[in-house]
Amino acid sequence: MKILHIAQITNNLTNGVNAVVPQHIKYQSAFADIRFVNYNKIIIDEISRWQVEFNSLNDILPNLKVQGFIPDMVIIHEVNNLKNVKFLKLLLKMKIPYIIVPHGEITRTALKKKWLKKKIAYILLFNKFIRKAIAIQCLSQVELENIKIKTPKKFVSTNGVTLPDKYKTSFNSDKCNMVYIGRLDSFHKGLDLLLEGISKIDDYCRINNIKLNIYGPDVFGRRKTLQALIEKLNINDIVFLNDEVIGEDKIKVLLENDLFIQTSRFEGMPIGILEAMSYGLPCIITEGTNLVSDVIAFDAGYNAGNTIESIADAIKTAVVDSKNWSIKGQNAINLIKQKYEWEMIAQDAINRYKELGE
Image 1 (cartoon, rainbow, N blue to C red):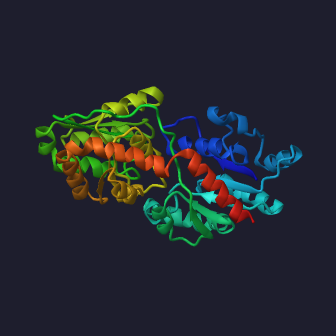
Image 2 (spheres, one colour; image 1 turned 90 degrees about the horizontal axis):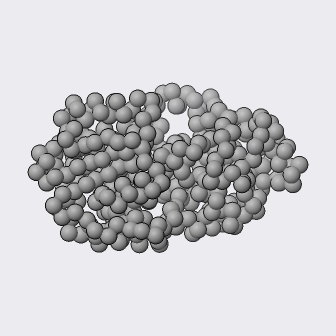
């Protein structure tokens, strides 16, 4: 099967879509003939061997045809990009079917952000793009159930991780170090809820020596906004903002901490949580992460609702349960082994694409 992936990504791996699209391509290449087009023309280091260079959108499909590559299926990552609307005309002209992977963009919760502006945009621009797809690929069952706008067929094929060769082996007994690694998007990632939750139990955190380290890139002035909230809530002795970390530095940070916490309002399938669990960290997560059912089923961490009170209670529950962190960490690794290794994920995706293309 010949598959063309299309996205607009960079080499900045702190962004979830930037991190997972190359992995989908790399691992799917073991089961299909793959090519990749990056709308912004940036060469993506990890998948440059599959990347197709082009001058204009109109060149992409004709140039591939000359090379003997006519895609059986096109996989388009994310919705909110005007280039998708332009490329749609080319796909329809050549009668090439396509699947959209929204990465959480069109769930009911995601659309609440700047709701009116997004509603107008979807009616005017993206409605036809979504409607003409042969399917929507959701990254979790929760995402599938929370897409309420009219779409074609929906199915679940998720993100994955590669199991590392080192794991968390010991945990603190006299303190608790929590960590979040990801974008500093307060609404999407629920960082405002997390900080408010910690503020609600600030004395408890001080008495029990609980600290939270947040790592992420400073874009759109978000760090300044978060730091202002931390100071307003008077928790700057509990919560610390740090620069983004990648590669070996990221691994070191994960292994130095006891718990990974992510309190997103909505997600597709958050790679940061999967990575943390693959290293044996129990996680504190909210319903918006789409991983609560798995964490409960495998007893791999602690869950909360998307409210300040629930997040505060989950942190206290996790701290009281410190004797079981090691067990939950091993359960987290087992969860990844059974459900989220990339080879398994990639083969499942290709099988789904073949079924839809028949």
